Image 1 (cartoon, rainbow, N blue to C red):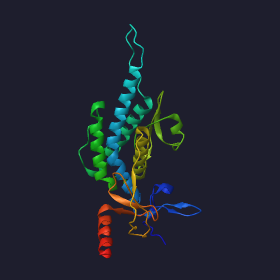
Image 2: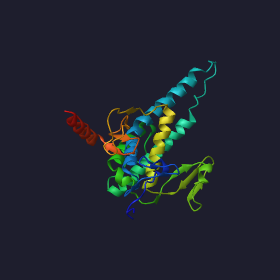
Image 3: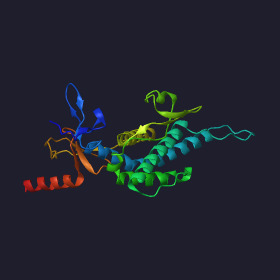
Image 4: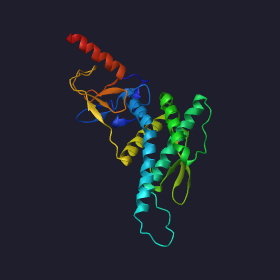
Length: 257
């Protein structure tokens, strides 16, 4: 019987600690919004997002420069080089989402508010500082209660929101104010990370730790992803902090002596 204080991980069927059967995928039960393994994924996303944002900026500048270089020279002044709208819009979305969660956490933690009018040139620094703060207070972040937050959505996106959501319809987008909680914060951060990795063409390097049994199930299925401070078992889906993994290796070594 599951304790009433526990609930299914908010990541649902994508939960890193889910139990996979022939009939279904059951997320892990946890006293928090997300299980420990999924909190590790959220932390990993927060630590990589600042570099990914800067990489997107490089990508945007390179595409603009490449487009300008392909133009045929004429006696007339050339119009400004078109920017990659998809990358540009996503960078705006990333900035808006991260800074809005930073603002919410600062309010709950009683910290001074961060500057709200951040210029384009200072956004990488603002995003890096926001991600560092969200990483520091990640458990408080995923525990936030629902509260209206501004999100720029397309008309198609609006169709997936409850009918009572307040908002302003503008010519090219909708200013909506859905009620968002800590569970939404985790999902948004994971989505931002996946999208940024896809757009920059980066891949997460995963190393198989051959010959080392899992401390929980003893299957030889341990892996470690680049940038993560721990290892993960593909068999039982247990996440082990790197300190515990190091102690486990030491224990195994002593048994062989």
